[in-house]
Length: 185
Image (cartoon, rainbow, N blue to C red; front, side):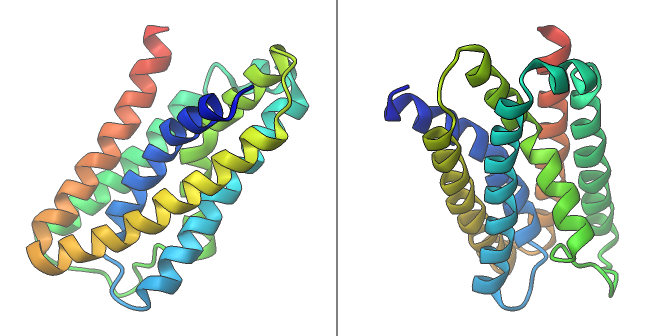
């Protein structure tokens, strides 16, 4: 597979990472660079890992969860997005809100990387190597996530609560797009 094709696939997968990181960046107040790096490492690592897992598992894993993967991603993103919108509207920020705790990072990473599992599976079915594309997917997702946190933080600093509400809307929109894409196909 040529590098340009792998890069296009990687960017398409990384857009969800950017949007989720953008939303998270609206509420992260401290240690921006470290927060962006941690979120980028999780999202990039999961994207790369899911592509490798999809390739390694072949069609078995897709047949096991393929009928519900879109519902899982939609549910996770919708719950987090609605919560962000609610908190943006009421103007209160709970003291324990932390997008960088391990549970939240893993849940968001899984939600944004389910499509990468399918990409890995398609590479296996096409008898293509996955190593270079998975690396490109991981690096692209890291970069997009890192930038998403920084941009989200800047927007929140200048625009305040409406950005948090918009971030929640984006998360719900991504969930709806994932669900609709699977239901239509």
